[in-house]
Length: 126
Length: 108
Image 1 (cartoon, each protein chain N blue to C red):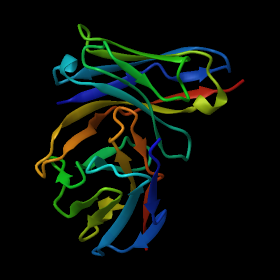
Image 2: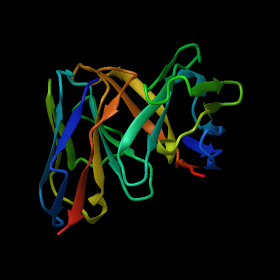
Image 3: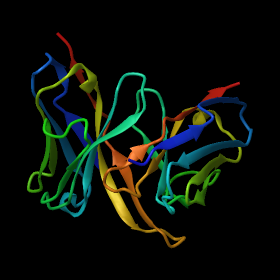
Image 4: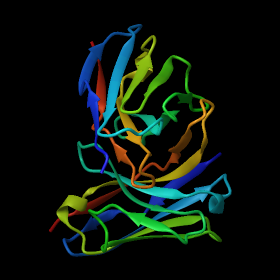
């Protein structure tokens, strides 16, 4: 079974740090780009960060750039999100998600997230 | 940034109803549009990718259409397990993807 399992969430004070992990199984991890997506309480989905399969290329949402760092360990099939200078508005459930991309049957390209973890909750509060 | 809007924001429907949800992009995104279903306390689930391709394992009552700026998710005969929130997501500006605000489907 293809599976993603996040861990590392918790309660942290404003200005603090936290590292999230996402353990992957059931697929060749290094072949796939990965994303972190978050969801604040009662709100919609927000893309946070992306990393290529090799780990050589990373991208960040403006809201977290300079504070969060995405990385991966392909030898241990694990994705990470290092979060620093945390703020109250970083409070959310954080999901890791596997990316699929290619050419759809109708002929257009696609880029989507086909497998998601169960999420880990980050609460930033004093 | 590409902004996504959805309508309606919520709807009430009965089992067996045909349901249509609309998603609009602030600029043309060709067919770079995906749909996800999310139930309370659960992770999103991919339903449709590339605007109209059905993800493996998803029932055929779900369908997607559209290109450019206007897209539609249709559920042809709503089932009890379909009551959930549905999100569209553009991947034209990959990897800086953006989601619509969601459409919550309630039981009438």
